[in-house]
Length: 124
Image 1 (cartoon, rainbow, N blue to C red):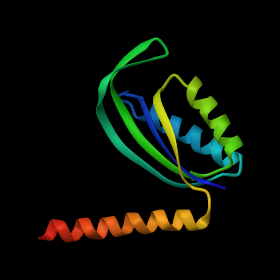
Image 2: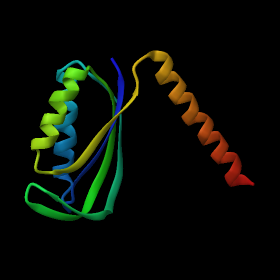
Image 3: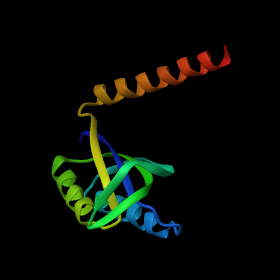
Image 4: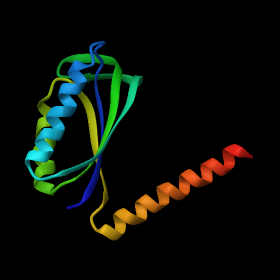
């Protein structure tokens, strides 16, 4: 199963229960289809780079979150269908990080080396 990363921008609501429900629904769908959810990150509430329209509503602020998961391409199609129909989702994109274990391990190694390099640069 390939490793994917999804970045999602959802409509901002001061009550974060809506975002929690969206993330729970997404992860539950993936787990029911046999996927592996590796990591969930929240980037917080940010001003959108431009005004965006989705489901006949304009948005200026959004809640950003990412999801790393392993799944089959067929499950990815059904996930895209769910995201397209959900009124909370403004934008989303899915990146394929790797399809083989060697690819995924190499990406992880690059990320760790990048963090080490950043740590040495910030102490100088």
